[in-house]
Length: 175
Image (cartoon, rainbow, N blue to C red; front, top):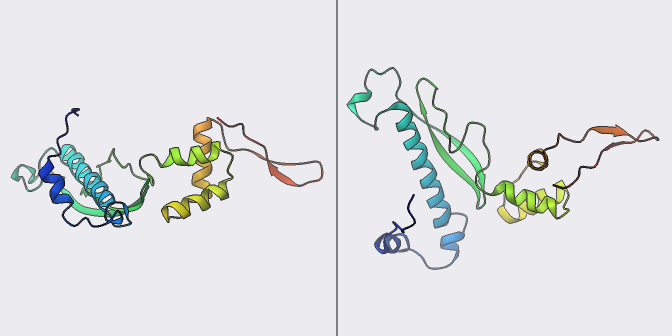
């Protein structure tokens, strides 16, 4: 990737033709979200082309034993909220995307946001409520705990009983 901008002023003018207010850029169906979706889907298509070894519609792909086989939908969490993606697939089922791996449910700096809230002392439920308020999406407490545990390099806290028989989790040190 080069440091020079490859986005021409003409392209920017074309993208901003319907711009009237800030929500047109940053809203739920804003330009930023649409661009992120389009770029991710284009990159996934390029990954599939690299995997198969031929371009879409290329006659070289005939009778190869593996070809494009439509898409499957997947919802991922990003810094801008949820994005519904169309993930390309191949007939043999051997395509493993690297950009958005199978089973991956979040993308970008989402983990960083969870960790920064966790480091500030917020509980898992407070983080869950904060993310729902900011991004309008429901994040499971399990995901928040897994992200925090992965960052701290520890295993989940074991559940123990105190001397009165009450169950509790032992405290984890902050990273």
